Amino acid sequence: MAPKSRSQLIVALDFDRLAEAESMALRLAGVVAMFKIGSQLFTAEGPRAVERLSRFGPGIFLDLKFHDIPNTVAGAVAAAARLPGIKLVNVHALGGAEMMRAARQALGRGAQRPKLLAVTILTSLDAAALRHVGIQGGPEVRALALARLAKSCGLDGVVASPKEAAVIRRACRRNFLIVVPGVRPALAGKDDQARVATPGEAIRAGADYVVIGRPITGAPDPRAAAEAINAEIAAALLP
Image 1 (cartoon, rainbow, N blue to C red):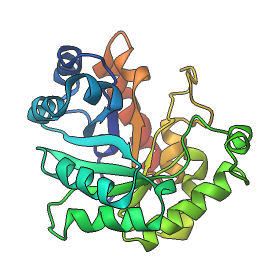
Image 2 (cartoon, one colour):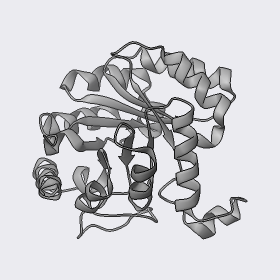
Image 3 (cartoon, rainbow, N blue to C red):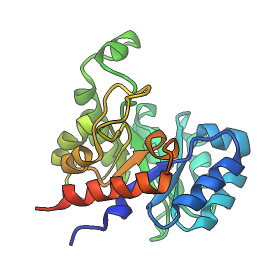
């Protein structure tokens, strides 16, 4: 049986202040799978943001994209796993195999541990931007290679653009999580994203979760916007 649509929607709470994030979480609780806490809110409010937002029910995707030497990243991942309500945590795949293996080992093997994801190629980057930082090959080629590396290191899945989700799904199979940012409803703007898709397109490409921020949190009625996206996801799951 396909999962309920709301189990696949993660809302990014990209706010400067915890009070704003809590107000939005209150409006959205019950219609989303998780709230994403990224570097903006975590830098402003710290672990307190996780503690407070975890009380609203949905789990937390702690999106801090750790990228450092293996020992440092292992310590950061272990600290993240001790915070309440953490369901997903991530590292940058470009940190390398040794770093990813250290991060995975730091989580242990308990059934209740957070899932560990590797960020492949940021959705704000296109082929030209990759060339400017010395990375050859298009985003699809590089994202697929990094996804395969992450899987070989024992990670639970990746964060990848909707444009790469299908090739990663074919290569890494169903037991590998694919979390897709860069998702925009058809009438929404691209903002600062370069490689985007609609929620339905992302789900049909193989995404397990879609991450959406401003099209929901900036909408006149955020809950209605989230429910409309849930409906689109449900339609995409139909045979």
